[in-house]
Length: 163
Image (cartoon, rainbow, N blue to C red; front, side, top):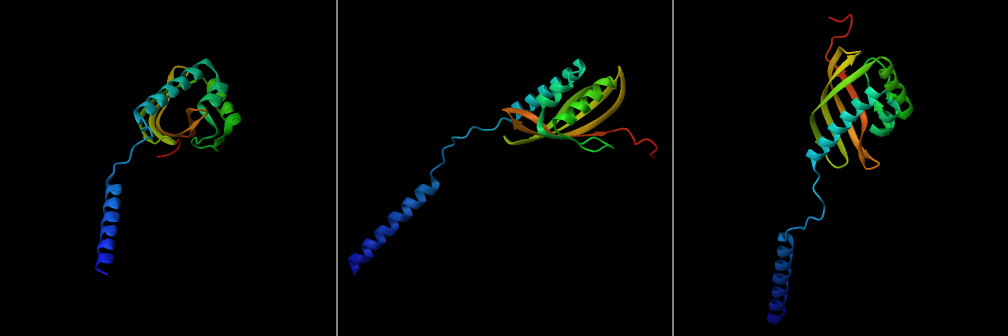
């Protein structure tokens, strides 16, 4: 019986030592770390591309290349603009009205799946400043690129007729 207890105790101590060692072994990281700074830079470059395409009058490239196929533009005082065809129409209206935008990315938060951008904008029409405001944009990867999934601008100007 004494030999059984000694053998059992030794087995328990060995198992405890093995368990403790395996719990304290550092895990090897195989996954790469997400680079939020690089993602923010890519978003700012995409915003610059949006303004360049708008100045060229290329609403088709804006809708197809910069927004996801299921994107929504959540503009003020209007129904949501949903999908590529409606986005092409919206940006074509901006081109026709002579709009240009200056977009400035203030902050980007998120991970390798979804990013949220906070920024500011200035809208000009035919060379005259007509609006300033801020926006929130949700980005997701599509076709290996960060594209706008939800776009929600908010003017700093008071509502007409408001106090």
